[in-house]
Length: 361
Image (spheres, rainbow, N blue to C red):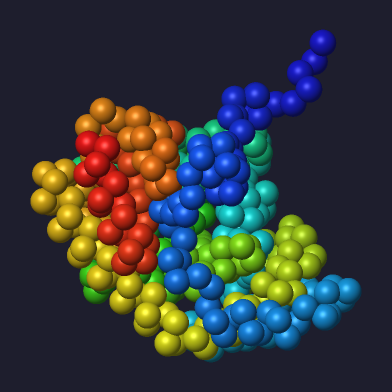
């Protein structure tokens, strides 16, 4: 009997969805739990976005603007780009999938660093593509190792900068030098989901680089800085040629009406953005200090999350913290079993995390 699907799908492990917090609390008999596992904005969504969404809810019987004209126009003003070079997605995850569907044929090859965002490998294998992973060096993307993985069949490279889950970031000179030496027929996807949190001015920025390499596609999201993860809205920018090809494959109405309205308003919510960045930087300083006092090692970050090395392993610490009502992320699936990852929370959440970690250790 012939196989129901192809080998890539057979090898995939379904993404394990977490239970709702309310259900975890019921099962474990706990209350007032906090979640520091998904790199979400601790302040919630942009207030201006919420108001814009509420004004649009009575129009839900209408299809959204399939061209995303107003959001792309607003993004174009922010980025200094024509709207023909911008594309919207149902979260940046959809755009990752859209890149694969547009440019990768079965049995063609993709390269990523690892550990990195797990969706890249999932989408490539699901499409019947081949993927190779270049190991990180000291928790940083090793561009030389990535280059060595390139073959004549390589069609796409994924570079997550800053990288999830390590929080490390490549400098502009590093990435520019890399782009100049790779074959010029490879689509390079530069995933900048956390670029707004970067404090090091030397870190590469796709807006500066995509004019240097014609097949660079830069991804960004409204999920993190703007607190709109539940709306699923992301965007990308590239040359008109790349965007044109992707629009031929893109589903109509892929960015919903409320997401577009919320994203436009969020871009104008400068006060919320400034407060978010302040909370993250102050939170990182507090958490670093608390972990240092406990003698625990951590990986400094350019994002709103970071890795912590814990005794007895990440999975064990995850389970113990869960019973105390503090949800963190175990890093086993990223090949880092000795680590947990947390995102910065509100001050009281950060304090509770440190207090609880001290208790269980």
